[in-house]
Image (cartoon, rainbow, N blue to C red):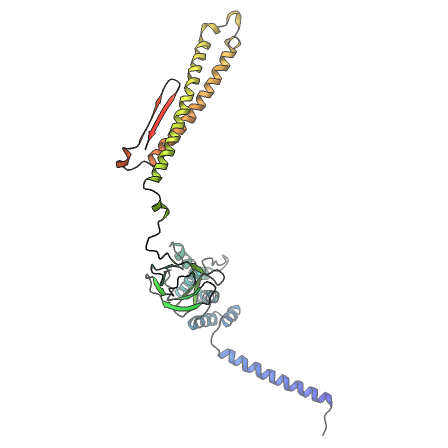
Length: 358
């Protein structure tokens, strides 16, 4: 018995198709029985199978070990499916976690009140408080511990993942239990070198809710000074009362300038009064029908010019004096020191003399 080449080819094709079908059937059965995954939840959500979406999302979250982006998506799928099924408390809790993970979460306004109701309650919770899900780290005084303050208004965090390394080195990971309201203490190598950290907030199943710091931009905490002499801050280095003295000096200068400006207005004031007397005198009365302005135009011009300069100098001087007084009041020393500070001005006919002591 012999077979043609074409018969062999067709037989090979049939064998391959049979093997492929068997593989796909096995893979499909294995996939159906495999642990819940985010892909399965997405598929059920697209098929508008909310019961299946809710079931798979809850199971996937309970398995844990998801990254923040996947955790956020699973909480979204759980929240939407629970809301669609009328499970309002579960939907509100899922939306609360979702907004905690991503505060920028927003639902379309066109969605039904059934879906938006639990979301609105969760959003109202986060808006009613002035905090968000976060973590802040500092060194202990002896540089042997990392002290992490966790902000967790929704009581979501159960553990903190900490990855640390010397700059440019490899990360070492540790996991610490979080007790609400208490700082997390993490022991770290005490070598005197800058260190880098990544903080991961974890829920009860080990899902990552938020990461503080990234591989590209980790948290960097340089070691504290170990010298016995404490580091003085800028305020400590500044002599006592120096800040107040500066303010008093500035106020005195401004007040002096204001007094000088006001004093400079006095000659123009006197000149204006003199020109006004001439303008109102009989010398400018009009014989032969001429007006006072025609006869004494020069006097009127000089009077107006002196009046303008007088008003400008009085106004500027008054404003400066007011500003200087306010500055002096704000920077005035305690009563014990105030007695040693003196400032005064004397206004003469055409001059102003001021003196100050501190």
